[in-house]
Image 1 (cartoon, protein in one colour):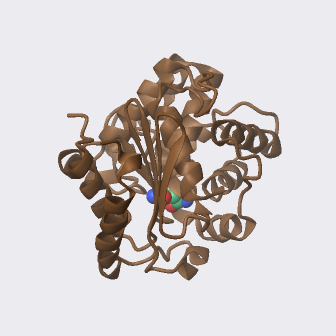
Image 2 (cartoon, helix red, strand yellow):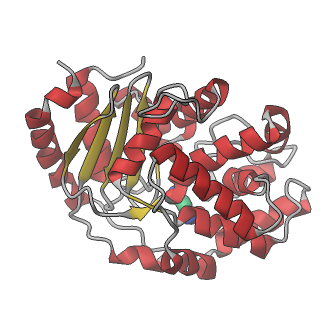
Image 3 (cartoon, rainbow, N blue to C red):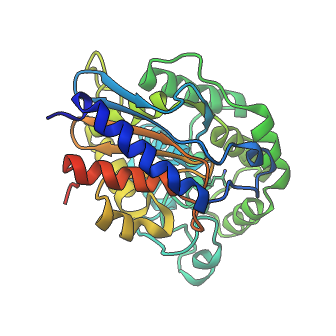
Length: 310
Ligand code: GLN
């Protein structure tokens, strides 16, 4: 049976996973994220022919945070090509928390290990084409509008400002990389763009559609028109497997086995090759910054529908 025909089982799984929200905590290092409701859990799934299963309050919107790293990587690769992008950011998992600086210092050359940690994402964002912050952000939003078919997607200014004003760790990553010639941007400009990119607001349905396009070799949900080149969609999925759930990516690969990317707002986007996109929102996080109930829900979905790629 296809996933979309088994709505009853999915509702039960969402209810069961919801009980895990009590063991997590909403992110508070970005002050504006503290107001999220920790009990929330919602889900949207796109499967093959645009059918969509939803459970929980899927109208609720939240910010992309680290999930944006996958999308900016796609855009930077389309703008600059693999050779240039990977001359400034590596392809290896770190095993460290997403905001760690340690590998920048202990590795030579001093480039970030991958695009899914903050240092790597900042370097990737610095490669998006555009002559101003507005132009770069505008291109990113247009790209997201195209992927989701939802042109009302914007960034949340309160969340962006809240992060910008408190992003001293990310500032230090930028200065470190600037010293070592990984980036040459004005750091405050780069941080403004990065915090706005992280504050782009979506619903679970939007996430499921982005996940679907990546799963579906970069082709659009309805028209099947290519939006992301096939080789880039493959690179995205590979990073989602090796580094998408931060330093829990290995355990996640074993327990769930689906390319996925999480963000500290509590979102998770998952892409089951070749026909399923999943969007989840559950803001109560575990100690590594992944949605507690969201991970449980993906584990149940993977088991029930045999979704592991391995
Ligand atoms: N904006 C967040 C940060 O840079 C994103 C981190 C995350 O979602 N893990 O800290």
